[in-house]
Image (cartoon, rainbow, N blue to C red; front, side, top):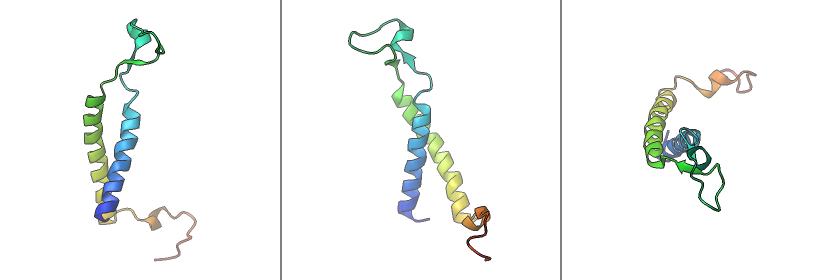
Length: 90
């Protein structure tokens, strides 16, 4: 795995993890009972974006390290998941 592909893989893990973490612990304006005029009741009152970004960075780093280890050591290869034997015998 090259440097560029490692960075791209980390960014993919980071954005996927961030999109999963976004709806966690959201307090909407409707739940808080303090709806700002002109906004929807489902608009976030407290979003905790900084904390979510830090947690996302840590989780993405752990997931990237596991994936990088598997890719670099060759523990799992494309031939291991070739169920229809399209790649032929090694």
